Image (cartoon, rainbow, N blue to C red; front, side, top):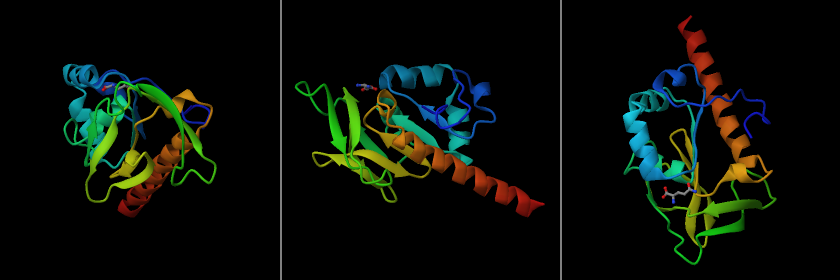
Length: 178
Ligand code: GLN
């Protein structure tokens, strides 16, 4: 998805691979395992420096949970795991997403979380049945669903715009420093 948007995409499994990244995607999976692996790989300090340097992060599904206030604390929200319950483990829905234009976006939810609490400065970009499922704040864009599982690249495009903006701001700061 990122390559289609002309980004150079690499896989990150170790802290040293985070050097020189302009943005980071924390994908879906299983948040408990991912949190444990992030800790055992020693990725936490690198993730926090990335975030503190103003570099954007896209968290999807379990990636949203990993970013929340109860885990890495990269965005001030609280996620509720497997929130849609047993009947609705996996489903698709058409969402209106702020910043993605008029056309509804087909979203694939797989044992998805929803956002239970949003802190100050967190923007809700999409809801499903009253629950926030796409949010943005403090350089973090996060979705309950899997935007990489359809052909629609609009969520990734929003993320790429955040990355480009952050890069431009960084270049300006650099230039001002002389
Ligand atoms: N249910 C998983 C969790 O709680 C998330 C599932 C996913 O990423 N598709 O971590």
